[in-house]
Length: 133
Image 1: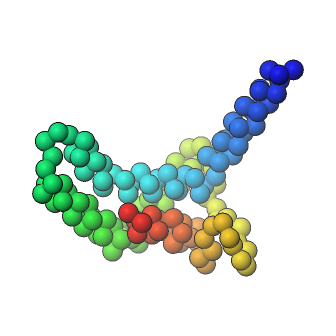
Image 2: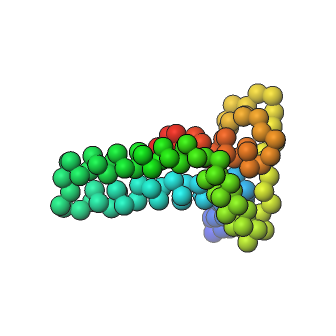
């Protein structure tokens, strides 16, 4: 009887994970995070080396900041490319691009108005991610 309870629990967890990763919001967040974090990858790898000095590290930080500011300044271009890539990835896994249901008062996710799915995810996922970094 105990084994059945464990199997049910594991199956429930697996179904929850499957439901989460088969939503378009997960796909667009994954693609956006991949592109934004690519700007800091070389810097992070360099910091892990033994030969890094503080002056060179500061120059790398400045370079990452300038690169991310460039992304933020040209967000319309970047968001269109990222959204297109997310749509292709979503199509490969049979996920339809969609906007979450909108309510008058939201407590657990952003409620920025948008007329299209691309605009919604740009305002609620991509811009806040770049601004945060």
